[in-house]
Length: 434
Length: 125
Image (tube, rainbow over all chains, first blue to last red; front, top):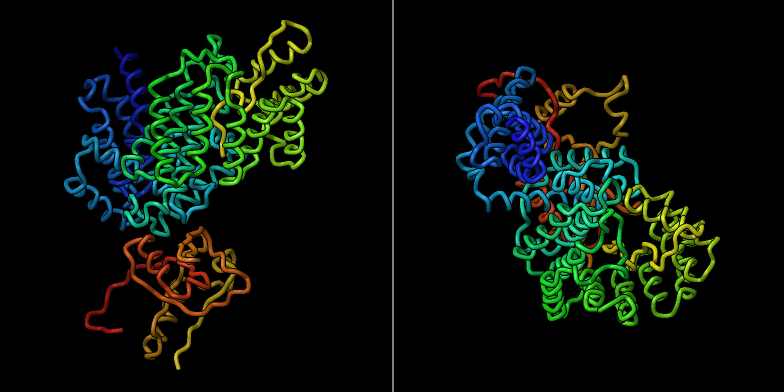
């Protein structure tokens, strides 16, 4: 019984902790106090649920428990700082006017409040992303640091400073008013896409696909679309759906990544693809085509192809050309280079990849080296392929991906022969950042 | 004539040198100038990490973290405003005509950290 309750508390933590946190921040008006309250609430659940039974609405129970724990904490600290006593009393009286913690709609609004607050333009872009991944998605600073090729201490400092600025500069906990909404949207979109990516191609850990985070990204996209039918929200949601549609085919039974070219296309989720296509149509119909919509259009070309060989690579290269204009980035160029290799042959692709690597921005990006390795292998240059695979392997911390790269290296040494290709951004690792 | 006295300092050093003023001393001086009838307004500012800069160019407002005035920009004026939160303050800042050619740094006022004193009844500042 107790073990079952523990499992339930753990599951509740995974599914509800971020929602509970978002609501607690609204109640308590402070990120740090809300995080402590969240922790206390779950500790109380571990203690009380086995004895008293599982509450009908665990989320509402946790919000209420968290609020009382926060008031207790403030009262204890009030011995040293009298002003906290007033705050504790205000919080004690507040909930009547603050809505029912069981109210699903209010809770969803809290998540959106949290997102817009974390993505406030008065915070640096890197702080927005770090804070959203930490607070909205509950990632650890280590995971965030890895996703952004930086050190955990740097991320932790960013988060501490961002929270201090929210508190000290008076950044409000609210969804912006209609007049400000579109301006504030850009940073929110980039953050949501990064969240989705973290779930879609988690850069660290045992599993290559952390489905819940990808679903979270899609869910945030839908929520945002409901609030603001902006063409780029449609584009972003379409992009996420078209990537998510391939989830079932992206990993082998052994948990290794399966490249786009080798995926069983019968496993792709046709409903998600149809929904993604419809959204792209709606976005194009507005006449305002942005970076996310273009990426979604590229994903839709893949989704519509019967096989890798039958893919319209010329159209994909063309879309990348427009994308490189709309939102220039070395990763877009890398993806374009791989598409060029598919259209014109590996030599043309390798020329572009080498030029990109020579510029230095992608020197530590594992997929750039994996792409290079694959092109060298296809050209029959085993020695250079081996070096590039090794470099990709050195940079990869994701276990299934490492296994995959090790197998490719072994194949070059003549142990087992395969006709399959290697992970590269366009070829199958999927969601790549603009 | 009215004059604006601007306080500049190295934030790291302002509170840590032997000569550094304590908040009580700052408040006492402000009160003495006030009693002489010559103080119009005076406030301490929150640290520079709380700063946000607003610029309006070609009708579009950009908001950025930090006090990033161009080095060739000089202080040209100030508004002290009462706002509900940073968003409202930023909206007011974006409306300042000079935001179209310069930068408006928005920084919260800091409450001086002094022990509460009994308020003398009937006394007016």
